[in-house]
Length: 355
Image 1: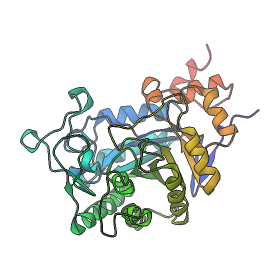
Image 2 (image 1 turned 30 degrees about the vertical axis):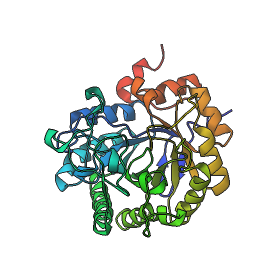
Image 3 (image 1 turned 180 degrees about the horizontal axis):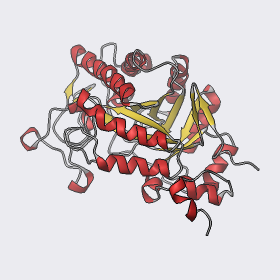
């Protein structure tokens, strides 16, 4: 049986050589939002390691949209130059470079993980966070509820960041609407208590993300793939759920989104998740089968035969790897060997192809 994991996937004008994608993973290694050689080597090694799509980490559309002071950003033109080098190298490896545009909202202004993920107040290099409503993630400093002007600024930031992403050479753009960041905060009734047109009903809660999408589409070429990452459920009572995710995905498909990158959780600290291998795959499957949109599966996926089975049973169209790709940048090369599938290796590594 031919491997589906190593079959090509055509989305609009882009042909991915296989169904292996590297998830956006924050590296907390930037100064003032600039990419550097760490990002080039990190992303480039996964391209030379055989993945078909490399999605750059959550890239902040504004300084206040960063999770930490060390987050990557694309809020000014000067950020473009190094990113051009990164996308050029990824393409040289017959892989496709993607970028995830993000705004952390109330989860912004914290230290990097190895510094404890601690809230940074303004006196310690932090900044005023914003959110749909003045509700904190923990018990920390309360975020500022966005007014109409603030909402329009964020939407304009996404638009400007998209224009820069095109200039930098990315071939896939993903809007981050998952993991408790700003778009997700608007979607969920647990974090959105607004009483205007951006809160309350399902239609109102999705309005902000739909307006972000519309702004992005004015700059993103219509012939290139456009993804949205969502959290299919908040894993908390009264929160965003799979039924709303299905309804939302139908609307996103109608509006021109090509693929839903299906994750879950991250909105509230009291979420209760039953972790097990492939625990999020049923969400991707349900959205795919009930809407007809392409989906990406993610979450504790570590073995070649495990992910091949996901594709063979039509539970998803693409498989995204995060922690496993941190452990092994050569996922594509190793999985091809495990599935007894012949693929091209980088010429520099070919002498290691056979023992």
